[in-house]
Image (tube, rainbow, N blue to C red; front, side):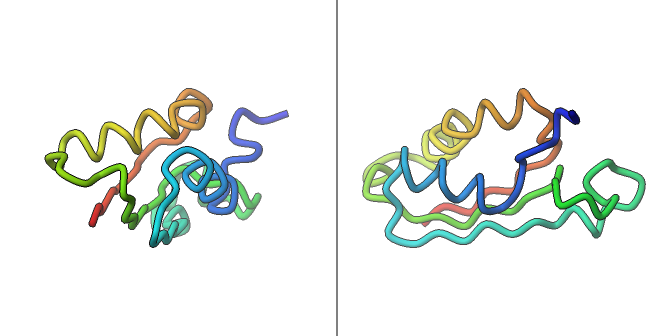
Length: 90
């Protein structure tokens, strides 16, 4: 079983929804644009994602702190091979 198994936009959305209670959330799998990486192999698992998220937990926090909340929420996926994560917080 590949370490990447289960790293999908849907899995990331579930985790972020559970932990950060977003008011707006979009997770895009951009793996196909990165030929040569495992996520571009058509398996359905990804390695490169973009997260656009707004959460009341971000209120009053600087950008670095908001991004840390996202990284902390997705740490399990990072440990399993999530290679690149672009984060846009609102």
